[in-house]
Length: 217
Image (cartoon, rainbow, N blue to C red; front, top):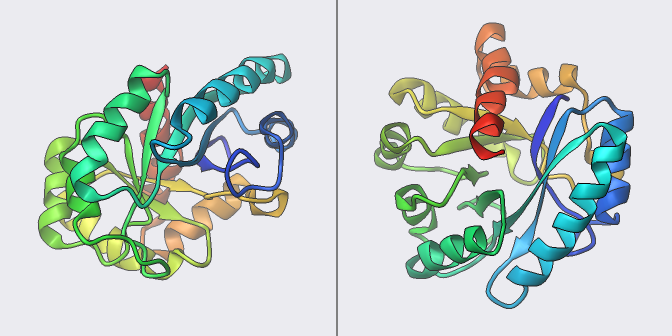
């Protein structure tokens, strides 16, 4: 997989050091990954600072790493505040933990994330509403198609509405352990499994992801 913009290290609930995750991704021929550990006001600065240090080391492997965060279970009314702070502290990418059906995410999280100018990707947004998908298309918020089984049950719903309204999508892994990293072939299978045609899947895996990376670096 060339680009994966949603991964976790042991700075939150992942299994690997940031640099170890980067090394494993480099060996699998990834070109770009993002460290996006779970974050709120309690650990925001620590995660960004530590992730940035290993992101710099990873350049020795020929891998570009974007230090960032996945803002998780923050009250919807505070998403904009925390996202802006993350960017000011040096996060290159802000992912929001969307309203997945597998966790009790506060209602309104999807909407407030889409409305926030500092949010780059809305991860695993569950049964996102048509209104919010239309807003995502209008505002340029990217929706995630995920390979993580606990969140992937609504991939088809997300993809169907994104296609209807023209919202952009990327395929991410939400990696927590080494076995979660996937190949390009697998990423395309995930996208096609959500109902996308091969050309549409390739656009998510390659074109949209590359466009976002160019915007963020």
